[in-house]
Image (cartoon, rainbow, N blue to C red; front, side, top):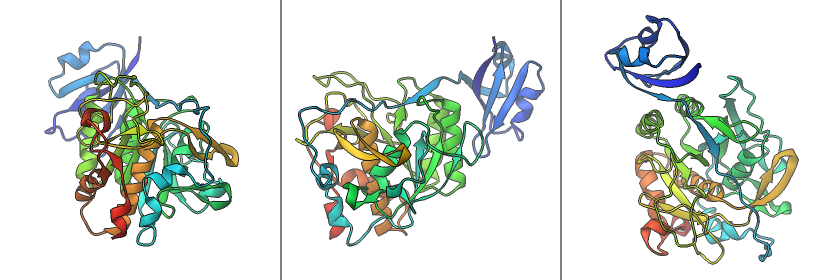
Length: 352
């Protein structure tokens, strides 16, 4: 049975394609521009094992968006979004609105025609079809994008960084599914197009060496990588339930709190959790020009990506690695680090 694999070739190999094309039964699908990685199809892994030029190989497993959860039935939504007020984003707006900061949304795409996102979507790419059509056919990517940069006062929807430039990098299909190879190619596109902040509201509980390599490379290139921690938590907050890529060292992992600043029961926990942001009953943009209220760490990650855009707008000449560390420090301590990281995102210091 033919399966798809990710392979890493030795750095000494000038042409990574030569690693596999010398042997039959292997079909090269993609050779990465910056990384010594190959995406290939094969029906016999023994060919990889016998090839001394291959450092490792791994099956290209699936990855999914962090499923949005039902809205709490016992809470009424305020006219002004509680989540934007909670992280004190309006306090920072007189000094920075994230204008011109390039934020990539690695997700299901973006509804660029949405009234609240008009003028905010600057471009994008569909990794799945290898085209420029990044239209959202699920809704998740549009919801995340609205949290980052929407502006619609009549609809009572405000993004954290209302003048940031959004780029829809479609790596997940209409059902919210994709593959590790899609994510790695999406990160490659982000590097190529000078993305400064990359939001990844998706995950898997399975480690990928290729994804680890790609996130390290992107971080070295100055991209601030933000990912949702996952929705696999429990009432006690026991266990290390963080998903990948949030668990990777090059990525800022974000958990969810509710209006009481308490960790949402679903929010994943464990060593490596960096920061918390609102993730319960978050109203934002939806496909078809609509609006929807959802819960999940996907929503939380978008708040931190928006906060990173505000920070970059304020300090455009500072190295992004330093800005990445700074956004995690913009936090209000709430509790044990394995449950709350450094605490709740607090953007008020940006107003000083």
